[in-house]
Length: 214
Ligand code: ADP
Ligand code: MG
Image 1: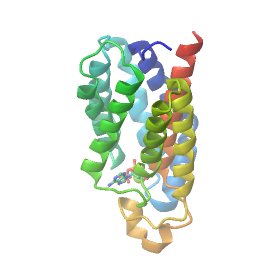
Image 2: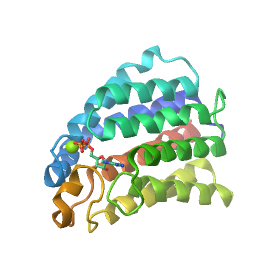
Image 3: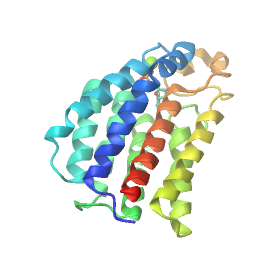
């Protein structure tokens, strides 16, 4: 399996943007139940802006991540904009300036991104946020790579873990973000940010599998 190059990373962003567009109404409906019904529109606006900027992106993963992060901070808004923005901004330096990323470096960059989200949002696992999808996903990714799996297989495992983490947010009482204002009434609803975060991981699995198939 070749390293993850900028083409594949761009495909990741395009697949995520298409997936967010496809699930826009679902994300909005989830946010309507425990927030302010803007998560679908926020993410769709932000990812369309990211895709629009891809043509002008320098061919280097760090530059791509930095541009993506800055675009998300500027265009998504809400709580999720700065958090998704931070995720990508923190991935940039973790690439070490490499032109393409070996699986461990890609995983390390994602981990740095998640640490940025946690540092910024102060959410721990179990507080009904995107962290509940991202944390098990990256744990599964590390474990699969550590046991010698290909990056494509490891990302498939990560995506399954993200989906499980997303589903696990439903019974939780929110402790962070707008949903926490509802207290106990936030229980019984799937978290919108965990839902979009699971789409982000699924998109990485799709993009890398396509590179392997090419
Ligand atoms: P807003 O809540 O400002 O309207 P969005 O609707 O776009 O922003 O995003 C809501 C999502 O953001 C939540 O479902 C949750 O997953 C995530 N979120 C909110 N606060 C935090 C936080 N402190 N840490 C991590 N994720 C958070
Ligand atoms: Mg909202």
